[in-house]
Amino acid sequence: MSERWSGPDTTDGAAGETDCAPPSTSDADLRDRLTSALRSHEHVLLCLDFDGTLAPIVADPDAATIRPGNRERLHELSARDDVTVAVVSGRELADVRDRVGVGRVHYVGNAGLERTRPEEDGVRVHPDARRTERRLARVRDTLVDKLGWTAGIEIEDKRWSLAVHTRNVPEDRYDRIAETVGRVADRAGGLHVSRGREVLEVGPASDATKGAAVAALADEVADEHGRDAPTDPLVVYVGDDRSDQTGLEAAADRGVAVFVGEDGPDDAHHVASPAAVGDLLGWLASDDGVADDGTR
Ligand SMILES: O=P(O)(O)OC[C@H]1O[C@H](O[C@H]2O[C@H](CO)[C@@H](O)[C@H](O)[C@H]2O)[C@H](O)[C@@H](O)[C@@H]1O
Image 1 (cartoon, rainbow, N blue to C red):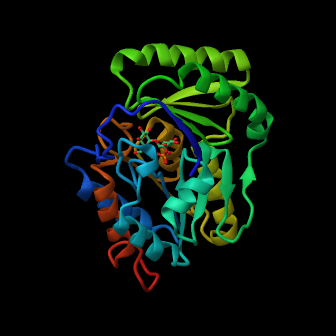
Image 2 (tube, rainbow, N blue to C red; image 1 turned 135 degrees about the vertical axis):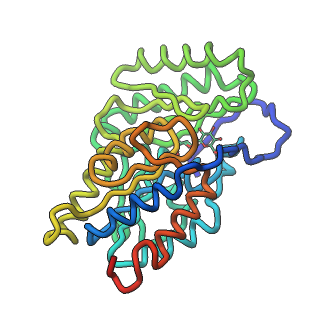
């Protein structure tokens, strides 16, 4: 995976699952909504975030693993001609592709800065990422210098962006870390800091987002599959984090947005956890979802 620098470990060494999502209250509504949407669409673009969606959140970012059932469902769904599957992650593309391990999938990495199609060898990188690559490397070195000694901290180098993980850092250190990250990034110029789940993400100030990547992919899929049906594809986006906000918005405009956990946007459906995502994928792959004979 991506290169990392870690401070002294403050955990007991176990990468325990910390995913304790609330019970889902809206499975039936979500399935009704999907059933009715599927009737009027020939093709589905199914976009899934990785951490917290396909994989449970764990204390050690390097230990995150896709739920085996979710991988199986992705295999089934991505083999269909009427479904395009995309994994849209904040992780480096090569990292998330290895962790998912399903070939016929589109991958978006670094929250929209990198994209690749199943049949493509290379990775398309957004120009804003290339523009700030050297500056970001200097920021990484400075942050390792200034913060690397902090107990529990981990700096994940994703080449086009950095993740400063604070999950295992004592709470009273957080403000100081956030202040340092903000100051160093500001000084470098052209960079943007955002907050995710116990992480500060530093990347180029750019309009490349998960949502922009999903919209671009939806247009490509429409060109490839949806010429006879102007509403196609139906975009379904499943994500759990702030960085998924733009992806969820793209899906709310063109399909169905599904938030994993509590406190998601009001116009999104909610499921409880990566295990519940597995149930949803299982339902989608079944005759009740995208039926085997292609009829809906
Ligand atoms: O967009 P995603 O696929 O959800 O990626 C978002 C970030 O996920 C990873 O960090 C998060 O998950 C870790 C493992 O569960 C957890 O320990 C950490 O606290 C979370 O922030 C990943 O390491 C980041 O690079 C991604 O940006």
